[in-house]
Length: 168
Image 1: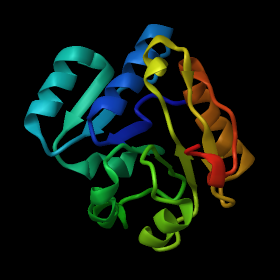
Image 2: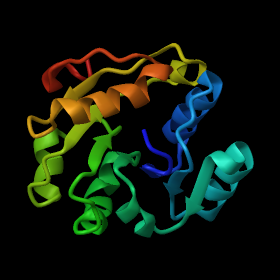
Image 3: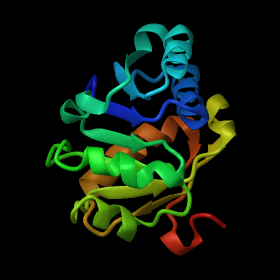
Image 4: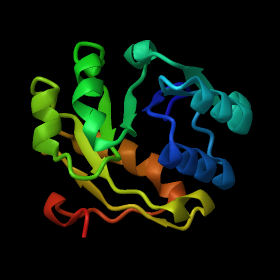
């Protein structure tokens, strides 16, 4: 993973868990951009993770990132994806960490964007002992899947499952 290639849309609990896991594993993920409209959230992330993260309250920097983690609650996904449409690089990969919003729904809300994955991470990822199942959209090439695997690998197990069993 090249430096400065990861972005999180949403700076809540699961973002802190994944950042903490990468730090615990000694994984250099470069300057991770984290966007969240809540200034208190972004201040806490900056204090906790220092130079590991770049903080923004607007998602403008997503244009420069190749791996975009969607780390928001399902009710705000349509609003966030509406802002994301047109901002994604053609070679970006969007990884949803949200339950209940399917790959088909995500693709539809992103006007057919097909480079998608869903992961349901768990808290043990912060100590590199997570169980983080992943499901792939058919449009995601094996090379892209390898990029996602390489980022998730330090966090624990990442079994590949069908989307219908992702949340079970």
